[in-house]
Image 1 (cartoon, rainbow, N blue to C red):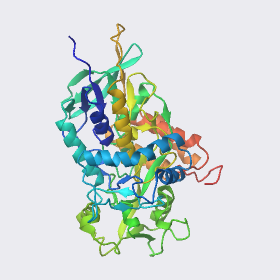
Image 2: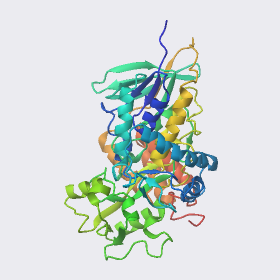
Image 3: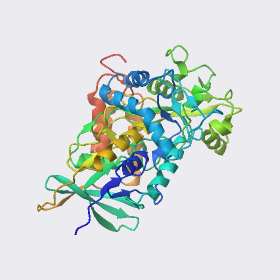
Image 4: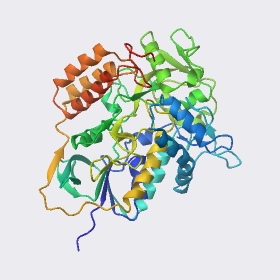
Length: 478
């Protein structure tokens, strides 16, 4: 008797791991580039998980803040579903072994971040929440008998037969290919931050899964909306930058310019805790006028609350306890992606997407702080539960064919693309720069350039300013 084809999950961040765990008892094969599942943006996440777990808070207030931050471009039903599910998501993670930060009485310690009207951010290990989640979920996945882990591979192509995605092709570090049959394929490959000149993302966040889904004919949604975190550590000549968590500003840190003047004074009612798009544009401007700094000298309990930031700063000769931190905006989170519902359906039979590679409308035009880990886990659990019982494609008789992402850019051209997107599709945009960038992209041959073109074209077509998409030449005022 032929063994049941597994669910193939490409990517082992929190979205992929939550999907895999929830799909039990169905056989799952996790495919990822790193042998140990490390290297995902999830592991670098310093912010926590937004959830209305305090008696004075509620899912409706969380939903309100999510909609405001997203410039009401969100799918409201999806937002309500996610914020309602948030407390249960935190409880599920605790059951998986995530040791959330608690006070002496055992109550969850709640922080506040930009755009939130209440303290509702749950952390684990201070500013190491992402790493704590990954450690717990990875341990559970390695113990689970229904999950097979396959690291050190990259996915080159999807297999298509009789109108369904029925498998994929991986290639290892030696260039050896392997074909995998699938009941379903799930793309959980993260975002596109590494296609920009400055980013808080790891190198693997290069949009490869998004490009593969688009090549298969899946629809895209909201590709123009790229969130730029206002405060990455400004290291000259570096692309992948350490993040300086927003929670520092929630704890009293303040932004200032080269002259020591407060950056956010009189610009927004929430000041330094304004939504990320507002703060990022102001920091972007200050960086072009001499620089931007974060004064966090008033913050206490660094080793307990912000050990990651402290270590990153000290490693580069900066002591945030006694002096200001040089900061810059950095490409951080892609609100756009493959168009899906909350169930992860791409519209292509057999192909699903979850996490940052997917766009289900929850984040709108600008993601509210600490909603990303929440979405990855909650939607991953939802998709996995569905896949546990969803029938796979019938064994077809048609000829199978491969859907390939296409050749990659050479290193020099890829570096030029990153700088191009940083300049043209950064926090401030205009039609002339976008058109020039599109012409340049069109002359390059590689899947990264095609993906860059799609982002640039979406940004050019949206002539108004909305959320993280800000046009200097907007036809409608921001």
